[in-house]
Image 1 (tube, rainbow, N blue to C red):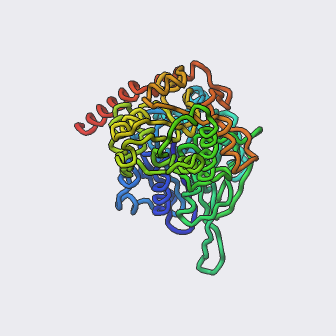
Image 2: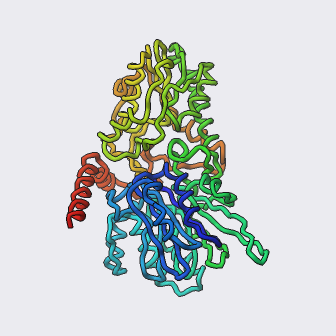
Length: 509
């Protein structure tokens, strides 16, 4: 999962892009990058591994001059964690194009061969984002139509060639800023505008695109629209706005896991309030617990969320069950999200660094712990153990999402199938694995219903992690096996070792 932002305006945009990336930091903590376009039509680039606050120092910000720019926060879903994989990427031809991408291409290998053999374009990294940029650039290079028509035609051809999930923002020297979204709308993309009064009194608008609406809110941009699946939005250097549907059969199939875990609760994605969706998830799960014969026999004393994604969900469950809601865990806000930390050992160590128990809420009580989901199960196992060590009599566990049994291929770096705790395990096996006295999951249909309450026009979701149905229809066993070779903890540990060795050789040189 990554976060993208693009701003075109009439004053320097470097600080605005930085501020937007700060509020999108939850979408990626591995690397960050900003590109601006200066008055001499030159790209100014700064990107590196690390958090936004660490990547950009004052000296970098001073160099990032220009009234148009794009930014990216990265969490690696394809390729390695090398700094060379950080975004945005750029190419010199045609014109000069820079691009940032959120998602994952499922036919990246075929596209790389196509680019090399038919377009004579070399891909220098293992990132599918560099491939996507070169596909678009090669298609734009062959267009002879007028400006906006050529750009929309290149996006149309890109949709025809590329498979997978992608929300993109790009800058084209001498032209303007472009944003587009895959025909299924799997990854989110929003657009906003902000009024700007020129020196002569005339009013013009600055435009912004981002992964989540919270970035618009932070900078005072008004949410105009959610970029539709397959749609492209183009803003010229003069501030003219054009948009066009560029896909043959677009359909809304947004990622369901965005609403469960990734997006901030104060964001709105595809006209659906993330906060309201999570409240509804709590209602659905609370009623399931209340109407369960097995759970009716459990003496629950207190409902405790695993902060922070599940807090709103747990509060609604407590209300429905008529039980007190308590903050039993205190979160250290300066530790990253354990789900997106590389390596099982690092994830395991970080749980106790991130969470500490408030013992008074556990001692001699039957506690119901509520989390947004269970992925590998190791975090849940440690949390249950922490509750018992704090003196809980019985520990019950509720997940706001169904069992996650299949790997994600559209931009979420979930582990390979054999590392998913629900894969080939019965509910009773899962309960024993995490050490809970009782375990309950949200039903998939209830989860879908909870989200669609905000926008009934969306009738289908990308929910392959729950049901194994990949909406692009091109995912087979061979591809999943290939992903497993990249995503296993052993493979990531080897990649980190190679990166450390390369860095050491670089420093010695």
